[in-house]
Image 1 (cartoon, rainbow, N blue to C red):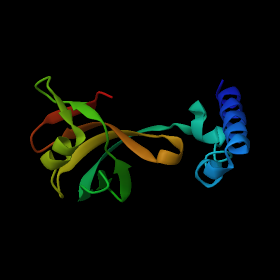
Image 2 (tube, rainbow, N blue to C red; image 1 turned 45 degrees about the horizontal axis):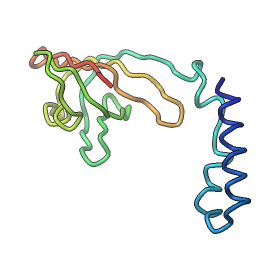
Image 3 (tube, rainbow, N blue to C red; image 1 turned 90 degrees about the horizontal axis):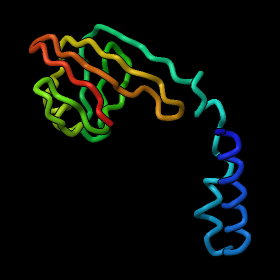
Length: 129
């Protein structure tokens, strides 16, 4: 499925570039940058780790736990059942917090946070979207 979709998109973009050369510079970067390994299920490994938050990067929405940089995006289900934005989750964390994280590798996006438990407060957050 992924191969056929990528090939179809590349053919369509190639046709658009041929038809409208004015947009060639903008569209050509999207033509051949797709790697089948990036989108395959095999490239997605799920990991769980107990560690300490070393750094919180609000600008890039990332946390560093035990030297591993993990991206935090989307909406999250808080312990009380409400849905919060990732920025609010990052603000609830502090460097030095002991946490249990579940994260997965998503191809070119790197490590993405799926769940986090803050041991200081016992709060458990799960990614909604």
